[in-house]
Amino acid sequence: GENVEQHPSTLSVQEGDSAVIKCTYSDSASNYFPWYKQELGKRPQLIIDIRSNVGEKKDQRIAVTLNKTAKHFSLHITETQPEDSAVYFCAASSASTGNQFYFGTGTSLTVIP
Amino acid sequence: EAEVAQSPRYKITEKSQAVAFWCDPISGHATLYWYRQILGQGPELLVQFQDESVVDDSQLPKDRFSAERLKGVDSTLKIQPAELGDSAMYLCASSLGLNTEAFFGQGTRLTVV
Image (cartoon, rainbow over all chains, first blue to last red; front, side):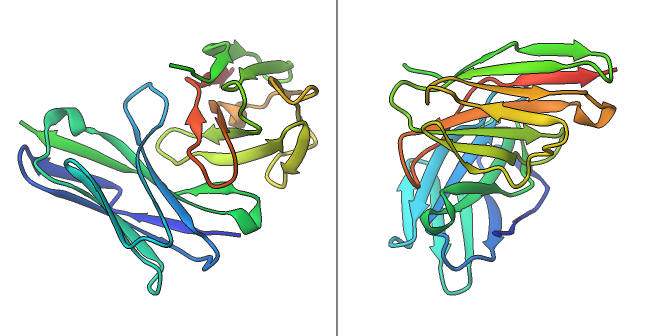
């Protein structure tokens, strides 16, 4: 099955700085990579996703890059704000293995005002 | 906005007792997932349904866990007997189709004492 690794496990940045979270995956058939944000006590919510036919996707302050050859993808948050503080999970999925989502272990991001 | 509904939100049960969780996915979503999330970790798939059929239950501890989605709409996850190690957040999610966004419910936080 798929193995998704996520780094770092914790990340602290000053407000206004950028934050980068990296994930690697093992199954070359994986072709859909969502990122979820989970605030304390709340449900995970999708913030951005990317498919394997695209190398980069951006939505305002959030961007995701994908390197299929190296099997890694990254989340970039620019101009961080205190409300960005949460746990972020990457995931990988493949239609060839039943569309299961395999999640990383999470990154706890703290934005210091 | 349509949401995945789960109940109960919180459940405290004694070990060796039976416990059941309910999930109502977003209308029209054929794929339904049950995940278990231990504090500080990413969600781990327990079972995946496509309509009323189980697609993957390889990670479901079948000696004590069971799941059903009889009419291909709502679903029930049961644990009998509950063990101390079952304490976790149980998340239900649904998606429209293959490799599309999974929407999560609020989860059921289970505490086994």
